[in-house]
Image (cartoon, rainbow, N blue to C red):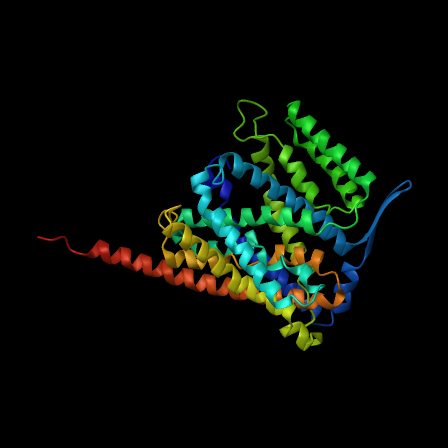
Length: 404
């Protein structure tokens, strides 16, 4: 992971992670719509308690997955964000301009479509951020299925959009999806963050102290009412981007990201998908299928994402502010804009925070699944066509005889 290609990960790994997410989703739907439904619900509802003296955390397994395992996911997101801002695609303002503006377009328009369709329902309005998210593993996994024909710059563009989306999701969760605050617990969490800062300034180059303090921050953020997954991001920001020894190939941050990524991509995210994607289709009402919540999410992801990103890219390029990624065509950019409409993991995660009413759960899942499936299939087919046309054009040019 020392160079750019290594940091972005092997294509086969991205494809495998995407396929595993699909398998976990299908498995969740099978469990939810067969005789295994009671087993599925019972498993996710199993109480898991950690008790130390008078202190206790008592939650069903589903919430341990969503609050605990996803904190590790956000730790990886934080590490990726820090590296990208320090030395990656987002470290150069000119290179970051196009994906930044494109990502903003892909956040604002989907949210606007959802709000427009749900403006009369204050409960449903809390889900406005659901279609603004991009699932980085799914999107890159489908792109990887197209093989080495995909220009590297196009893949980096999609990665940058997804990372900016993740940053926006972190900010949105912190500002809009925070419950009542416990000042005491928040103060202890703040002291933990100060301890992370101190470790960094003292030049501590082992990852273990940061993880241990980060776990304390997670516990007290959980108790404070601020969403506990933000502890992962807070911890990542203080992991040093320096080498323990001059002979080390990677910095502490890059090594931690490298070690953590397989566990997140092949473990945590499939588990999250299995726990959150299950919807009993036979019991879904007309409102669940065609109500403003499900339609708003589906249209936000499938229509809002592609129009928001492509509109922003077109205005930015035509205005001379930035250029298309090297080797990419407009048709390929449109395919990537479609893939960015795969919200899935992040959309479900935000939806769990915003739509807390039980009646909205089925609509949330149906909308996310519909929008993500439409975006993924159409993006894959368009990119496959665009890449084939480009390859055939290159072969034709190669065979064309030179003038006498």
